[in-house]
Image (cartoon, rainbow, N blue to C red; front, top):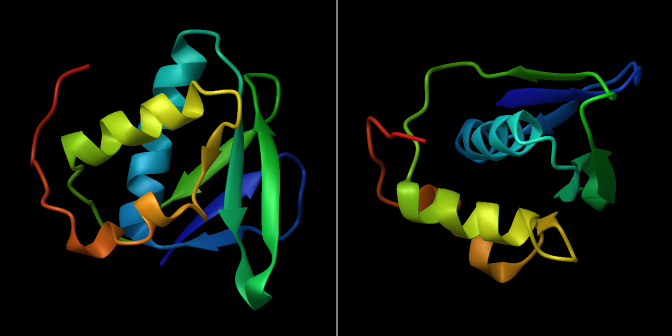
Length: 108
């Protein structure tokens, strides 16, 4: 289980390593392009949080292990992050992340 720390929040958000590896790749790509986006993510206790991701807000990604990235899933997430609704991990299309095939290398 990985952790996402957003802003100055004291408690990190627990996120599955596979999901967090993909969110990290999307986030780093978007921020490198100076693009902000909304990230909606389920949190512990069944809550759902929407975070505004932009370069001025500190983020920290902590993964327990190196996790390969599925390129097709990454493209879906990038497209969602670029949409008006942002990247919403509560949508059904991201519910089966554990079943996705993985690539061990990718290029940007």
